[in-house]
Image 1 (cartoon, rainbow, N blue to C red):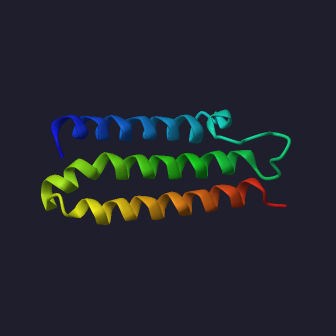
Image 2 (image 1 turned 30 degrees about the horizontal axis):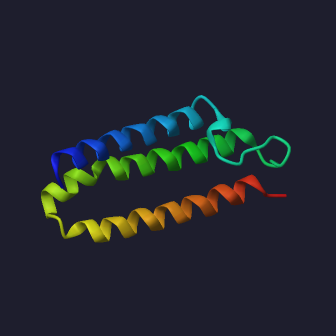
Length: 102
């Protein structure tokens, strides 16, 4: 990874962690795309905490990426990309489960 991509990855990780903080701690559910009070049937506090936590975990994964590349080399990027994609899919499934639960 070059210097610019390392800095961009670190900044993206910090931004995702900050969004997770706003959603989980400050309960700013309007930051979640597609959230509407009219279609939500669950507990908003639990939804905010879990969505915020998963966003913070994703931010930590992105933030640690340059360190992992520094330690293990460029070859680990492909495996790390798959881990992040799997995590995002799990995050979407969990978020939609809590949003539309009857």
